[in-house]
Image (cartoon, one colour):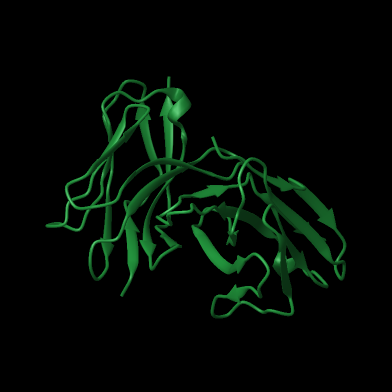
Length: 119
Length: 111
């Protein structure tokens, strides 16, 4: 089945550091990738949607300059948390969705998430 | 609005018990509906889905029926196992690709 790899799985860093999280689709071309944030014992909140080769679409309330998203290829999207602070600590999850020649509704495949802890 | 409401957890059951996790949605039209499962420290895995009214999704002994009359998509399993312990998320499709998730229900199965 479709596999999405997310790296790193866990990162701990000091306040003020910028952190990059990678999301790769391993066996399919991901025309669309999604970035979610999950607070402890809560649901996933969509942060942004990115289509390969174009700018990401951010959800209301998500700072574009804080959470930089790049989707430069059909198999890789990155989320960079710039100048991270303790309130940015969270579980970040990416998902990827492919496409078919005939179109249709392709499911999202999720990575295993990245636990970010800012000290 | 467009939302998904799940049964509040946590839910604790004994092995081989019957499971029901309720999920209702609000939407215009008939969106695709999903159940995802999240094991500790991992991302989400698609458990099952239904794309139109009266469809039944099933996988690994879990079932959910898309009921438009009650706008519900309740998850059921006849006999749960310890390995089913996880957080379960109900979700609906909004538009062509955006997923809207419920708040999640933590399930613990005791041997």
